[in-house]
Every structure is written in structure tokens, then in C-alpha cells.
Image (cartoon, rainbow, N blue to C red; front, side, top):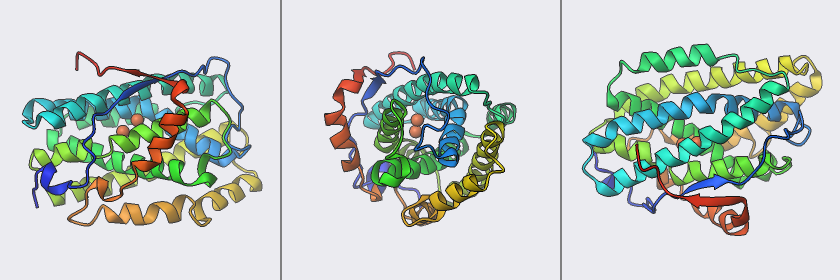
Length: 287
Ligand SMILES: [Fe+2]
Ligand SMILES: [Fe+2]
């Protein structure tokens, strides 16, 4: 069951990961329902934004801990790119979250999530990688939906449409880094699945609770229109549930690898057409 990244990821692009700084200004804020005037979808994305500064720092720490144990130089370079990309995501989502705070919202789960992350320090490098790659799988599915399904964020207001597209592109580009690191350290199937089940439960409950909290603070939680928006986004064809389910189930396949879903082409057109919205920067010298 333990295969090297090369054996298990024959379709991985293995291309260098570019770190990009987004040239957008969030200081003027944005509409309360910036995603198509739809309170449910807006707060579902806002809830994820709240989770990123803590969550992505945990992902960075997990792959950084693996770095001295790895021999594959190309994989080490990918880890540096991964760290650079996630660090820039954290930076901009902190600015985004400041604007959410100014709108009267808050990160309800912050103390609890911080406690969970402190507790995870007791786990092995392999287990932290297994947790990270489970979250990265959910993130990659979400990014795939953002990039391929117009009904997800096609009606978003700028600059948040640019922000979510950029973040989704980089999540797609680095979707196999934690996975390949786990395999390179000899991580096996049962540990991968056990932590995926744990993360599936946490991710679902956290996202639901934080979304409900944002809707409550916004005075939208008890409006029938909000629940209609939730049903429509989750249950429509190519919506959240039906788009995501096959990709979630694919993770249980013993031979699963992230690049079996070959979707890098979804990133290319935007990167060319919107090259004026970002600046390419180097990987962090100190990791
Ligand atoms: Fe990210
Ligand atoms: Fe990521």
C-alpha cells in the first residue's frame, strides 16, 4: 500500500509552484451579501475564510515538519512552494476577515479550533500530514467547483470573485503536495482513511456551525429565503452536494491520488487573462 509519489502519482504535473501576491484592495470593504445577493452562499464562503488563517498555518507546520525527513529534492521544492502559497492565502484572508468583523460577524469557533490545533502537536508527523491532506482534499474539491461550475461564484462581486478564483487556482496547483509527502514517508491506507473520516466530521460540523453563526449575526438565519438558498446551492445539479460527493468517495479508493482528477487546465486561462491582478513572487527563503 505504501508507494513512492512517483509510483502513485504518474499524472502529477510536478511543475514548480508559483507564489503570487494578489493586487487587490480590501480596505474599502465589500457588500454584506457579496455573492449574488445570496446570504447563504455568502456566509458559507465567509465561514471558510474565517477558518483559513489558523487552518492554513497548521497545514504549513505539518508539511514543514516532514521536510527534513524527505529525500526527493523536487518534492522539497514543492513543499516550499506550498508554504509560500498558503502563507499568502493566510495574509489576504486575514484582511478579508477584518472586513467581516467590521460587518459585525465573528469567528465563533476560533478558540475551539486553536485548542484542537495545539492538541494535534502531540501527533506524529505522518498523522498530521494525514489530517492536512484530508483537509486539502476537501479544499481541492471546493476549488474545483469554484473553477468549473458558474453557479458557485459566477455572480460574485469584485474583488472577492478574483480572490476566491486565485485561491482556488493555487489550491488546485498544490493539491498533491501533502499527499505525496505522506506517501514518501511511508504513510499507509488505514491511517489515511481513519484521519479522513475524522476530518470529514470536523469539516462538516465546523462549516455548518460557523455558517449558521454568520447568518444569525446577520439576521438572516430564520428567514425562509435563506433556507431556500441553502437547498438550491446544495441540491441543484452541479451544486455543492452532487458535485462534491463522487470526489469525496474517490478518496476511499486504495489507489487514490489527487491528480487522477486532471483539472489543471481550469487554472490556465485565468492566469493568462488576469495576469494584471497578481504579481509573481519567490518562495520564502526561510522556511
Ligand atoms: Fe490556501
Ligand atoms: Fe492548500
